[in-house]
Image (tube, rainbow, N blue to C red; front, side, top):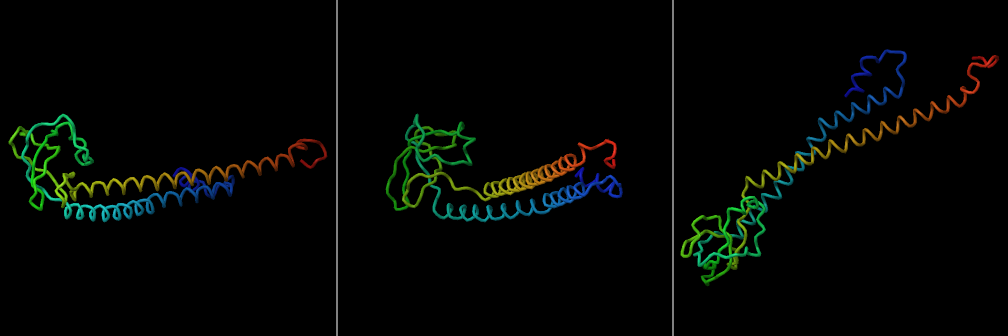
Length: 202
């Protein structure tokens, strides 16, 4: 941004170099890409992520069902299937219990499950989620959580786009500066040794 405004202020200055103008154009193009292209990239990424997650939400809701389990006793160990990222921050308030419930086909099942219910004593009823075969599974993701993940993915893509654009801009400017210094060295090598000597036309 400083390169753009600086060159604009002294665009008619006779000391302005062609490389200064090119650097300003590079900075302007990078700024426009950051303001326009990066948000579009984030929006597209967020929209696709939201579509995929909402499909997953619908699939989980179709393949899982809530059922009531009767607690037999508390269990000192957590069940092996606990992989629910939405409630990972609430694990400390959950209780591991041994419970029994009925599968969709009516057969009795028994196993270790996690429940957020504070009333998890023997004989109490708690809600759990099962798959079509009656096995306990994590609760399905809800739409709001899926949308939050999509928004975060979109923001991440936007920031990544901005970072890539700025990185390319810096590499381009660095390359232009190396070329500028190389030309200065060439000019100095051609004129510097005779600079100030009598009869050299200086």
